Image 1 (cartoon, rainbow, N blue to C red):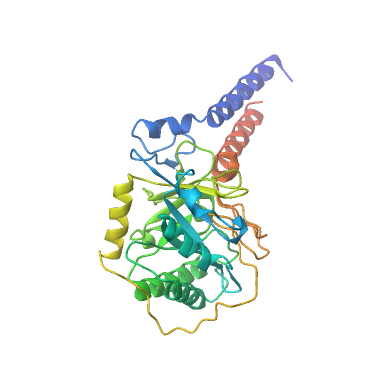
Image 2 (spheres, one colour):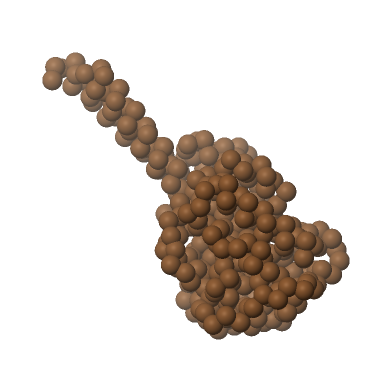
Length: 339
């Protein structure tokens, strides 16, 4: 190799390391903290809280027996999302207990279902609605949540099944459901359909960051899952997913009232879905799953099915790594061309 080539090699190598260093120091998020929601790293949307936030958690049977009084008092958790089921085969055995106890302790509560795109969406929605109807769904409760973070189906199938579930839940509860997901999963599976879900409230998952990376087209978030399997809360033995609401406590109360139309929306449907299936239900916190479906979603999942969801404890999203890899490849190609 000539001296000129060696010089070119050194320059190219310096460029690569400069780009990698910039992407990994978190500079992409500094823009958001100054009012610009566009991240510099990969031009991603990073949206910080508007100001004050309210602390909460999400739980399932994996958390075992919960001391809800301590969760509310010492733990300072003022709201909780409680899992109803993982699909239809794994109703959560602790839902009824947690649902009642959370309310008794003064914790604002909402129900979530780990949504399986390859399972009958109507049957899943019926199970959720039946569980709420049986245990009491009130105007002071947070709207139901669709937790979507794993799928091996094509985008069209995912979209169609999501729409069926969302329509059923809205028809039978009077509420627009909240959609929980992460940038990695959404951008890999649903980015072409983002506009179809603009009307739904959003709960974003992204762990270990100052401000969450948003799925393309989401814009803002109502809830943010900030920690997964490393989070702890007084009153709960072991790990517990951590969440925040984007606003004050009074704003959260108003948010719930607005979503409920300030009227009692006790569910009362004629569906006969059997929720007594003898199965272990589980998705840890923001999302524990009992089936074999491997999820890297920003929520604890025990499943074993490939999900590209971001978050997790790495504090970054997969897209950043892909972007750095592409930059390296491009510069290396340029180097060989020049050499």
